[in-house]
Length: 159
Image (cartoon, rainbow, N blue to C red; front, side):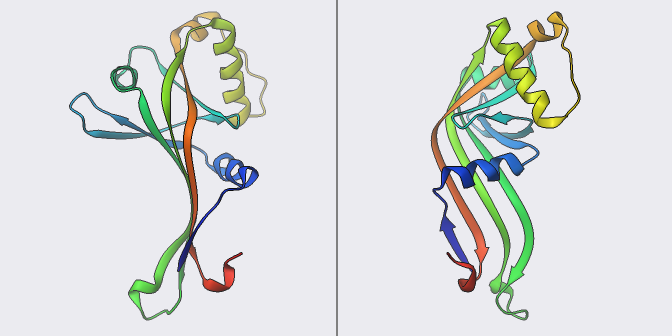
């Protein structure tokens, strides 16, 4: 099975947008990895997340703002030879992004981003109460580094 690098921005964005959530990798206060699933919206340059104010994730991101965010789509089991274990692979595509967390404090910007998040997950017209907007923590992670790969391709499937 082959792994190929994907560099086309439209294809990378399509992979990200197929994912119902991302995996946010933080560093805990003892220097250990801490990974958690989160809802997100991506605008092509920045990944926006949200959380409760004053929670554990916020504490970690404040102490160690460099994060890694991973997206993965596809879960088809494939193989080259049915009887050879090492020929099996999972056909999937992943995007790994690195960046630095910045918290958005401006009320209007928070509301704009929260509306983007809601539109990503529902077609319902949602209203937000001002206390909810004030009390939520909106995260912005500008993507500084990005890599994208496709896994589990048979030689005949390579472009």
